[in-house]
Length: 136
Image 1 (cartoon, rainbow, N blue to C red):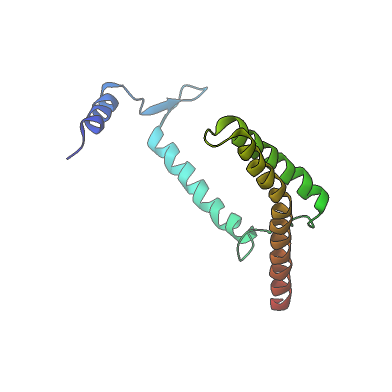
Image 2 (cartoon, rainbow, N blue to C red):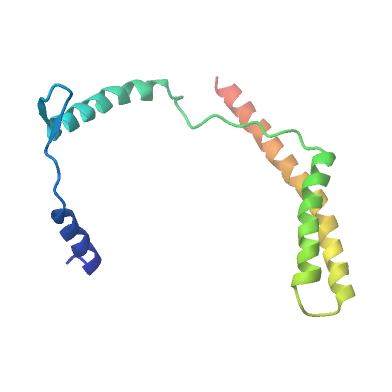
């Protein structure tokens, strides 16, 4: 049983008048059903050609950059600053100094964490490349 919303949508579609023919510049009438069939036929003809061009397996891999401490300091420092502000100004509970100390520890901990995450991503990319080269 359709819901009330579905019934209203269906009734609304019957209220509007839809054109069944399309007039061109010369005044000739072309049924819309024929135009749809032509469009579908063109799409079905184009699909096999597009599939042949795609690679056989998966999408292309995006090479992650080599891990560097400079990038880790920028990214981890930014995230650490956001966490520091959140701990000190937004969170309530405990003393101000203890929140600031905990926030500082977390902010500093983000730097090596981002470096190690970058390193893991880069190494897994290298391993994936090596496996692909062995298969070929």
